[in-house]
Length: 204
Image 1 (spheres, rainbow, N blue to C red):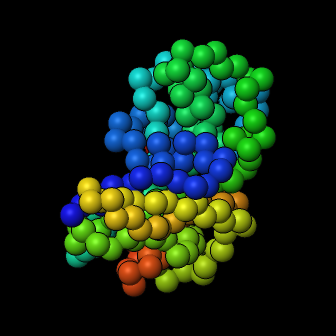
Image 2 (cartoon, rainbow, N blue to C red):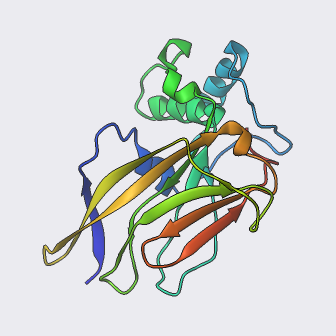
């Protein structure tokens, strides 16, 4: 029987799963550059983009499919898109959002990678991330370890009421790790790995 995500026992999730699992994606125009310093001008631009867009989600990190199946919805964020996302969430809730609402956590000069737990298509396996790293220059490059990680417990439940736990993970890296050719690598608890080669063409 298929498992569904039931609830999370983690605090301060800040809509992490909404960021990761949203299917409607909207981000900056082609030719954008990564904004490494969130100045007041950049904050104002991000808020404007967030309030104008129908839906803002974080950047998807797509990797190869696993033989166990299921959708793997890893995503990553920059300071700019975190501010735009927060403004967009406020808009969807008919709440105001100004520069005064932008937190240091949103503006932190970090690349953040979000890897959710998910239920495999075999209806029994709960897949959770064990590690997230960045490989400099490609698959065989040197390893950049995260400066911090946070695990969030996820509880899954099937239609018969049986429950199983997994955990999602957020890993933070220096924003300098967001470079063309670098690879985001996620290690899962089923002995599988996912790789995403970074292309900053449309990243802000």
